[in-house]
Length: 484
Image 1: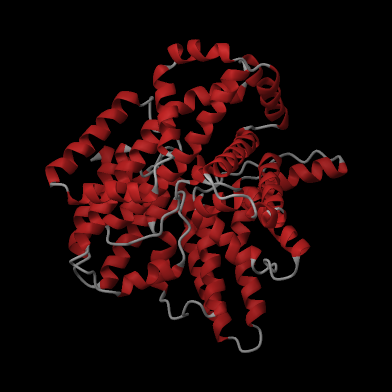
Image 2: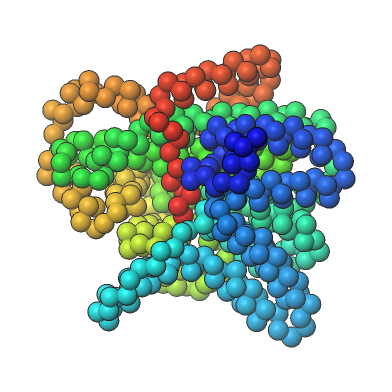
């Protein structure tokens, strides 16, 4: 009993959807949920909201209070906005600014202090600020709701209970995907289709299995070597730096898409269908296509709520270039309060501008395998370069890695490297080759799993868990995107 009380009242730094404590807790929660979901809708909503707030408490401690307070305030201000006859736009700006305020304070205060110190030669000390996990994601969901209600693309009759469910829904709290109100809230008001329920549940189980493989097996295992190289690039050869760069490009994909799969899969177990967040992004032939496949929830959010309001592509060529570049700068800054993320966003913005500027000429090229292969190679290579600045903690580290790759690359390291790290090489090469699979092939595999007998599903799940146990490090590493 003492251990149970301690678990219920003590935050956990490593709390996430892929920890054993959460797994045990979710089994208990889910057992009751299956009963509660068949009763009054309000009872189910309250039950899930209570568990979501507990989930937030485990991740954030007392700062979890920020979540319900922020949700109630944004819901109330949105209601006031829609009841205002003459000042709706003013209310919208006030709602957005109030909703953004906690994110700006917790995430960017020290970055702003750093900028002031550099600009006017002061020495203000950084504040000791803990960034609440998930604040970026639920803040963006709240903003999207207010703007959609203002635009009339989503009705404003959402009750406080429905809104709290939407903002606090625990599968989305830690690292999204950012979900629009029109995707989730209408599902709270419809009776579940019993014919589709088993398919949705098995789809959720399949996504959870994929997510576990990506995150707990691949991403966590290859992360250790990647960290060695990025922490001190000059201590390793150019070849080893290139391998770490390939490894990190796979690590961040498996880490974030794996978490997204687990999130979407967990929601599916509860009967809610969410949109996919990744669609084989490393198959992209240009940066525009990449951002239609990578972190789809975020890229569409910035498209709908920043790029298009800035004018999109409706105000001439040069304004379109500026809008693309500015949007990617903000997207880079969203990922973290650091000049490295700003540089990463600027590189993607510049790449998008170049692609749009050359789009007419590129469209005249032959549509054959050689042109597509070259386009893919150039896109993939450019993405690798941008990941250097995304992962490096300082500009000096990023430049050091670039220098090592440029000046000290030698294929003679290949055989010794493979012999020294066969498991790492197998996971990294296999993971990158897996990116070549087509969407229809992935769908066929999923359908085969859904149609398979329950004993096959159980054996696959147990095999995945055993693989994770065999390859795992001391514990599941924190999700990369949890810090954003």
